Image 1 (cartoon, rainbow, N blue to C red):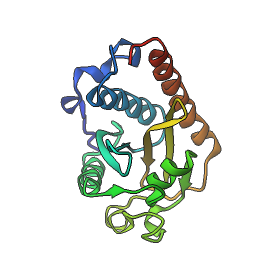
Image 2: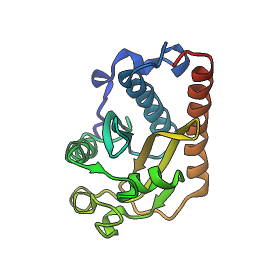
Image 3: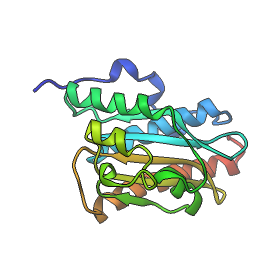
Length: 191
């Protein structure tokens, strides 16, 4: 089995802990921090792919951010499928409550779907893409800072899976640590 390394695609910033990135005062800095979060979650869990969605400047749409990550343990063929999913997903902009990320944005609550490819287009707008590329279980979490959604992170795997409380807890714990660090730095004027 051939494993593909994504190190050539990762900027040096991904090797640094969030606390070493100073300051987070622009969208590009937030994207860099989200990259670190996605790497951390995918590398410490079973998630194969992670992506992030950011509200646009007017907070009327969620847009796929440049922060995304594919788990390093995947084969080249698996990685290519996730890259294709990311590329095709760029065309989507989501209104409040629209699709999985839009619902997470609106309700500010995590959401698990055991098979996104089996969902209706209303529930998961990218269901046809998911069917073609074998995207199955998905779990999304809002990133809240000062009671506002900074971003929505969504993770996927290529197998159907019922809600998995330990995996959900592990993913959410890493997000909570990120939120805490981000909020702390905002309170001290570093953001």
